[in-house]
Length: 555
Image 1 (spheres, rainbow, N blue to C red):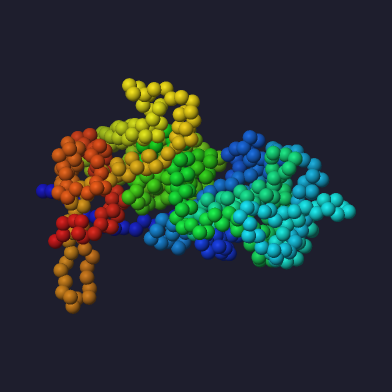
Image 2 (tube, rainbow, N blue to C red):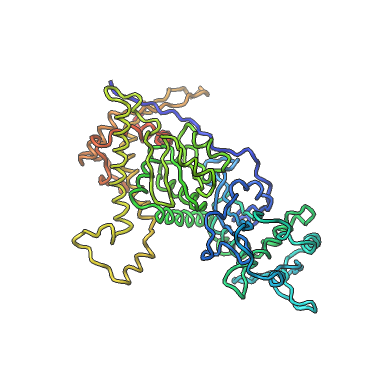
């Protein structure tokens, strides 16, 4: 009797927060920016204690007036779920200021007052220059020098609140304020450039290489008052958005997404060595519970999105939260289905949670560059094994995963770090200084790893559709009610094809130019448990369901 598996589609509900996204205004329809200062209240649990991760002067995270600064990328689940990947998320970049409890101001109050903006001055002149021209300017008067800003609208209410008092002087240590840009599309690059330019323009000081944050903080503080004009925020951001979006406005939105994903992949390669990277890839391919941890919150988002790229053409169909709020960490860690979570290690609660992870959760430490594989794989076949104990089968599955990760990691290393990974090759010579410099620039080539993963997954999927039997009920043309077709999968035939493929004896009747090579073919003798686990994944079920009738046997 042949073993047959019937694939039925099922829906996995994504994580949806209970709070609603605040309403925000839309600028530049081609980039679809959503802007709102009050959105920071909604994102507070994502950005709390943002700046704990690094407090050194070398990276300009602490200003000369004692504020810690963070510019972080993150995503939140979108309530308007659609079919594409972009419909799944709201993409966010936040600029957050937090009053440091340890750093002291290194500049006098008079010098700070000279740099603070005292008035927003109405100016209708449009700036069409290709280079950025700051809307900030200085004026001289009998009272001394003052700093003002040009805006395209009269803002009397804003100016009145601005001159009343300074927001930065009303709060003690630990006060937090910030600004977030939100978009329904992945335009992270443009949003990050906008906030970076805003910060540089307001906070740079001619007399110091470091920055002074109070000029921008006081402006953001005024926006928190309900009496100011509703268009104040758009007027403030308009010159910065106009410049940063000018280089993207005539290009497809997908260009920004591609650039971000390439940068995210490079960051992932710089955080994980080849073998741990391969181990994380195989673990996600088998749809296990995986936790990414890092003190760099932006890195959690980059790693999560880069790993999804490596799985293509398969699609992750389970829970994915690149940055888990503190209040939900303990709950999501015990989620019963597969998941991919990002936990920031700079939270006090994180240490306790990460040290007591369930036995079926794999930990990927992006700061150390290691992977701690789960002792028990979720949904493995060990529970129903006959003739062998469940523990023995589970141990054998872990051994196969480690063996596969070591081999696949070798391919990653040889593609990325040719000089060091292939140092024992008889054809390898010591590179000169110029070659070493060129290699350092080109070392994190994510496309190399992406091509290897694509070829490996394509080889894993080869022979899938010939093992599928499409069954549908025959109907007359007059019948309006039609039942959904069923797809039956022949596992024995699939295993037979994989054995032939590993021996180099299986070739399809019709050769295609994009057909995967057999160099990544896996033998059933060594990886039988990996095959059995992979056949029961949701990503494979979705891949088969998305196939057309002509690619399968049908009855």
